[in-house]
Length: 302
Image (cartoon, rainbow, N blue to C red; front, side, top):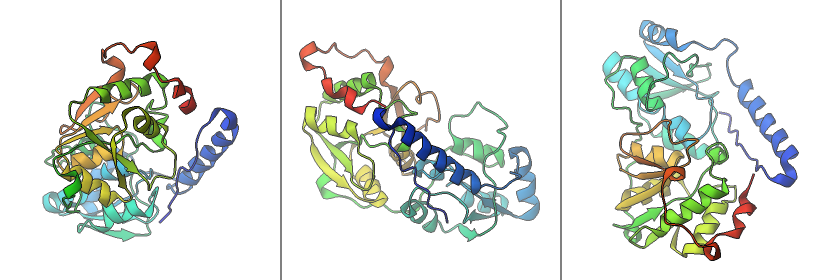
C-alpha cells in the first residue's frame, strides 16, 4: 500500500520549494487513482449487484480514513455486502492502516482499484460518514467506527486535556493565522481546571502552536507517540479540547464528547454530533493588553 506522506512545510523563505514538494505529493496521489472513477450515483447499485464493495481512500490522514470506517460493518449486516480495502489506498503512515483497517474484522484487502467519493450527489450533509451511509441506504448515525479498545491511563484519569496538534491540513484550516493562534491561547487561559497538553511526538512536523501553549501557559505535558496512545488519552480524560483534525474524528469514533476549537475556514464543515465546535474567530474574548500579546506570532506565519 502506498505510504505517501505530505512531508512539507510552507515557510516564507522557502515557499517555492514547499510548493514543488506539495505538487509532487499531489501527482503521486493522482497516480494511485483509477482512470475512470465510479460516480457516486452508480456505486450503490454496483455494490448491491455484486455483493461486494472495494474502497480506495485517496487521502492519507487519520480523519480521511475514519470517514469510511463505519461502512464495512453496516454494509455486511444491513446489505450483506462484503467490503475490501484497496491496496492502492493512500496512507500518511502505516500506523493509520494498522489502526483503522487491520483491526477492522469486517474488511479484507485487494490489489484492485476501488471506489472513492466522486461526483457528490448532495452537499447538505454534516459529515462525510453520514453522506456515505445515506449513499448506500443504510440506517445511520453519522459517526465513524474503530475497533480498538482504549485503555485507562491513570496519570490522565479525570483530567482536562488539550491537544493543539494538527497535520498538513493546518494551513488550509487557518491554524497558522496569527490572530487565530492568539485567540487559541487566550481561550485556553479561560479553562478553569489545570489542563494537560498532549504533545504528539510521532508527527514529523514542528508544531509552533504547541510551543506557544508551553511558553505562555506552562501546562503539564503528556507525550503521544502512537494513535493508540492518543485513543487512550482521549478515553482517560474527563474533558477534551481538540483541533479540527483526525483527533476530533477519533473522539467521535470512541463516542467521547469533545470541544473542537477551529477557525472560520473549517468550522462550518463536517461536524460530528458528539462534538461541540467553536469558531474562535467569532468568540468575544476579553481584550488582551499590548504587553501580553505574543510577538512570536509571526514565526508561525506561512
